[in-house]
Length: 330
Image (cartoon, rainbow, N blue to C red; front, side):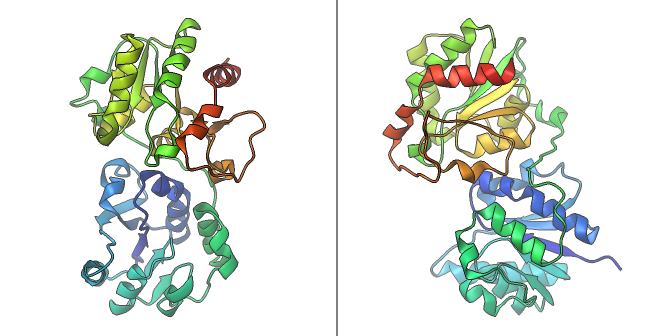
């Protein structure tokens, strides 16, 4: 009889979910079964993961706090009870899915077991308290290792059927050579400045490295794309701020390479196997070590340093970024 497997991941950022793709695949391979996934709606997982053949169903849960906490617990319990899972894996420290799984009578509940979560976990292979200091990828690696689950690849890889994305996105299918700039970020302190992107585009264009540049950013920060277009007075920029995630993925897959801030689109581009350059001047570089991203950083940059002020991104000069890109692509 086939076993039913569910994996829960509660972080709300798309990039964080992408980091977990190798471990989701490893769990599926270990059981030789397709898995179900429960994540936040904000990740848009139902759109971006639907072509992965090791994933069966994708459910959304809000994972709220306050009075809504127990509403979400019972929503999770309902899913667990209806699906009758043999295993529930929780890839982060939250209690809510562990409580719901216990209420649903799930026999095998696996999680890191940090703090109160340990009360609800049934498989007693926990992480150590000091593992709290590991990044999310390393926590998942250790959790799978102590549960004898082999990890074949730590780099995220995302398969997408590009043909289904072309519908309603004809404006992105322009002739010529394309690249993409990721110009926003969830945290403003990670964002390179608009005029720096304009200068970089000018340098790359003079080198004949593109005909068009897709400007990738969310609708809530569409002003960044508009500022770049208006201030540059160039007609090679394509504003993607009104595109949904499927349109963004199509733009990325049409691009020869991606240059952008430390954000979801950067992680997405790398997972799609697009040559990706990450602009880092305020973040620990070690956070990106389990990715295929080429890091561009200021000279003499100190790793493990976090500076939560956007002005720090000024340390990264367009000429430096340009030179680093040219070295890697030619």
